[in-house]
Image (cartoon, rainbow, N blue to C red; front, side, top):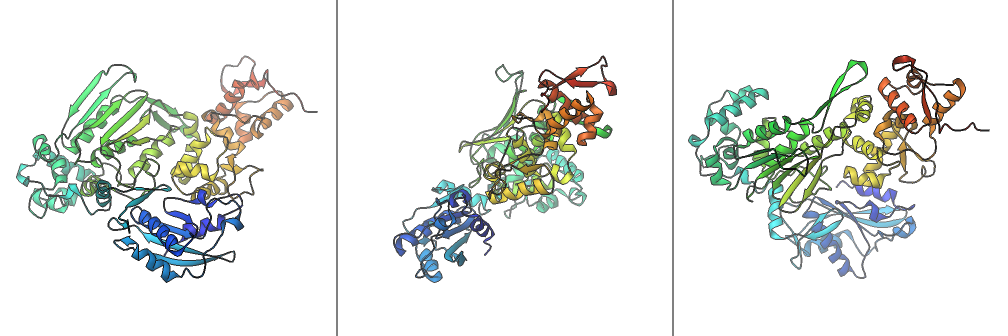
Length: 571
């Protein structure tokens, strides 16, 4: 059994790092209780919690509150044999759980690792109590949530169930729309089939011969859809400001493929666009709501909603925000705090797979990543997801993105500029002068050990950040932007270091020696393109460290000399 996460955590334990801070939704630490019976009950409860979620490992023999390594490693007595632990868990769970049990010698101390994979069906302890792990907590797992879990694990798929509708009642218009999308997706071999052969190839015909619920949602007319999903529909409204009356409204209940196009077109028609010139004559377009992010969230709302729950998908559009609301909570196990990293869990699996074939959006589990990436790349905050249990709300912040950040990202190696974890870390560093692995872990939704790996890559491979001298030797150092990176990001950063940093000091030293500085000088000093150099000069001017001198209005002749807050010469 793979115990990589537990082994990494055990290696980091101590030196000011508690086991509690290393726990995740798949890793827990426990101490041996006062008796074997109490210990086995404790393990059985913890493993029920894991098996009903993503699976996980319990490390027995560790105090999760101790900060010193010697105090944290408490050990497991020899009378707790591997067989005793395995049988004790088997006898205390229903259906019985067969756990993987292994031993480790850590600094001369015996600890035991007990691991279970994700379960096929819900489990409970000897008292009949079912729980599941969410984050670092074990929460009650009632029957209606157990059904949601079975849906998420592919044991129940409403969209694959047979409807009462035959193939002859489908819309010819929607079938032709389906064929056009298949051709656009490069699937001509499917587009050329007869209607029945096409639907069979897409598994939209149930064994009974009738169309599946997914087929009805995609290809039937409004009255047929109402038979299988009463209340199905969507709405859109636009407000010139978030508090004003709506000036544009629309309601409908067209099939899903048409609905996606209708909603995305409505949003697209009111997009704000700002052209941005990059070095080398490249021009980009900054927008308030990136088309890719919008499409992913609209598609997600329509295909991942609960069709066993009444309600419509609603879009509220204003310059301040775009809000998309869909019926039904997030699929069991998925929360706003793990939506990026939780394994693929489509509520309507057949419907999701069909939409994926049509390339209307990314495969399940990647669409949210894409929405995050597109928002971050233009210097905006990532999408905000909220789950009330009966509704999911996805919000995109309005306003044009940050051009200084876009220019900076465009200069990064492509691998770094598309890495979601790097983008999230850089976004965090726009508003914080320092970050460490525990802080980044919550943002990228991964364990602190994995967050530390991201920070090391950013420091060693991409040369974006550096550890502070005070924390460099800690297991989780605090990192800050390198001075040249801070200069390049310039106006996209919402803070300045209190003292004059290395970048400022180089400019000050140059002005002190030559009497002035120019954009060309800044480009040469820091290896920046013209726009980043301009942003750095503007930042220095805003802080009154330098000011424009001479009569030149633009171009290479503009010079900048000492400003009112130019530092005095050091003795």
